[in-house]
Length: 428
Image (cartoon, helix red, strand yellow):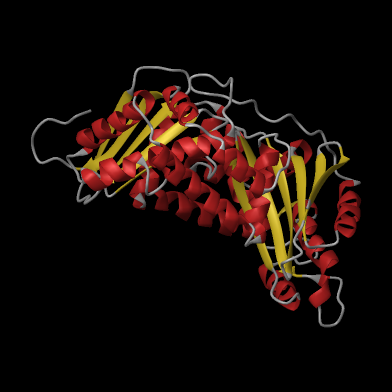
């Protein structure tokens, strides 16, 4: 069903079963240490890489090639794994068996994915200046647009106060103030750093893994490599809760983001335990926050919880009527306290387990879903196991473990974005 093996220092290949699909997928993940001074170059990089590579130097040529391959799909994205960042390139298309003229589609897909990663289009040994200019403007628009999405803006403002200058606080999307300093040369330097220091994981589904491995090793022959260790788990220290309030004229729905810390990176919970705990608190329609804060008290338009295992943070974010932020905050804290001290019924626990297991059942319906499941295990340093085993672990999570896990979080930061008050005192 799956197999993972090491091909070279810091280079791994995982083959996943895709027999029931008529499509295949090749993805390459480069997990590298994030650095504040390089964050904006790293954010521009996937935008430039997605435009083409040496054999297809522009978007038109690349689009034509993908179209010739029966409408294959290409994705280039940037994500996180703990405090590290992950550059991902994936190509998805029909399997070799369905090629009308017997084309070697596996080789074509691998050529695109590895071409983008290992053979980008360069001009005078640096990235194309016009491509860099265009994608800097694209990123600038994205960063400006954050303010217009008040939910996203509130969450990111809370994270900035919470993480401060710690490695986990490095912005995945980069920094507007740093964009003028991004040049074709600095972008090439960041590309070289990522390629040298990253741990490389290639995921193959439904394609000829032997051909993919051979091509990968060929591409690596002339690449200087010094893979670095993954960032260690971390957690922000426990401190008295800090409250921040930002008023914006004309806002019709206030946003509230509350962040909690475990205070220590030791004794990381099993991911199945964390999923159940978040589902019970605020991650499902049967959760305490949904049933009590949203439905019974009508304090929130939405109210949900999530957690990041490797950075020891739990987040509750909600949309509330301006002026009711304090009531909503108190109600959320009461529900958390009740879960930590009071009973958790078997019915509500089973409802949350059933919802999570239903989601695991759907993972097998898409190549991307299965890949995310297995790469998540790789990123956490776990042994590979299918979603069916995840269901077994989820079913075994007890109310006592949920209570214990939630009790380990300490309230740290509250950030509110609300409407401008007309008179009266401000609650800063």
